[in-house]
Image (cartoon, rainbow, N blue to C red):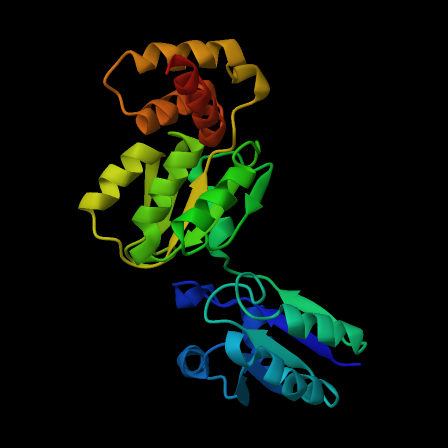
Amino acid sequence: MSTLFLVATPIGNLEDLSPHAQRVLREVKLIAAEDTRHSRKLLGRFDIHTPMTSYFEHNERLKLHVALNALQTGDVALISDAGMPGINDPGYLLVRAALDAGHQVSPIPGPSAPIAALAASGLPTDQFLYLGYPARKSSERQRDFEKVANLPYTLIFLESPHRLLPTLEDLREIFGDREVVVAAELTKMYERFFRGNLSEALTFFKKEPARGEFTIVVAGAQPEEGRWGPEQVLKALRDGLGTEQAPSQLARRVAAEAGWPRNEVYDLLREIRKETK
């Protein structure tokens, strides 16, 4: 049977297309590309002229048969616009279909924005969770963030420029003022990293125009031994109610200091406020 190759392509610097990847892209019968116009420029840079077909999110089911038919007579390569196919890009359906048809599936490793950002972040890399792009609506983002707020793993997200600030705001709202690393333009000339806490990141990116695609790496929840007990949280909330601090700000501050999810602290604060009315 033939082989479906999953070929990682550069996320910025074209020199990151490995000799292995170049050879495979020359030798396969067909290249299924997320955007043929984008990929034609990349392949032209390396003098690769293998036939291509488009294979992107909205035609993925329609184009399955094209790739599967090609696999009947030779090898096929799948590429996305950047990084490893199937990781936040089209590919899963084709991989499953190729395996079900008895073909081999072989990865040609290379650039990956989530892994590159994690490795350079300075945050723990022994256990991490990649969560892709957060939901577009703030209410949905916050619900999703609450599901992972207690996890001890380093968390990795992707985000677009126009949603960077709202996402950072929701992260701070749910996680408290955790440590964060925001990576942009990875492997490109203007590659940059912001390192600090979420409040500092918000201040920075409100002044600094957001350009390019971003990878956000957030510290995991504090170990249980570093967390406050319920009585300590309750005392901090009661003390805070005697100040001019807004309830949402109080809950966020106490959550960050206590190592608790913001929603749990806010629930306690609501109960306290009911008791004092």
